[in-house]
Image (cartoon, rainbow, N blue to C red; front, side, top):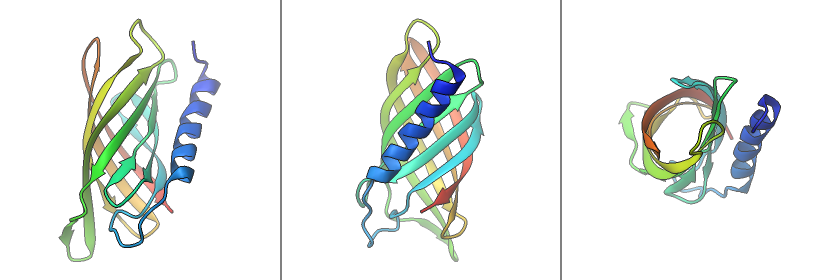
Length: 150
């Protein structure tokens, strides 16, 4: 059983390790990493993006209502053709991975995700994703957040 402190530390660790291990290509529109906060239908979120190459990223997230903790660890395909309106960039992604819950009988399952990042500035990104996970029964949730890009 995870305590609040252990779950929070685990979420920060997953995001920090993934971000620090990433290597980005300077030629890609997807050559940014971020760590951020947000909300979901499951509560408070700490999330991030760690670029692996021109088109692949890891997008870990820790979700909590402070009595149950969920960790999402998807690998995503980042589409290199941004939807542009003037200087604004919307960068879509889709992928899959694993979901780990700290409460209940079944704690591990598959995850499908899709969403987009919106580059507000070079240092700030808004993000949103929809997630479908398969732990016992099918579960749908969403995440909306803002992150600091580096």
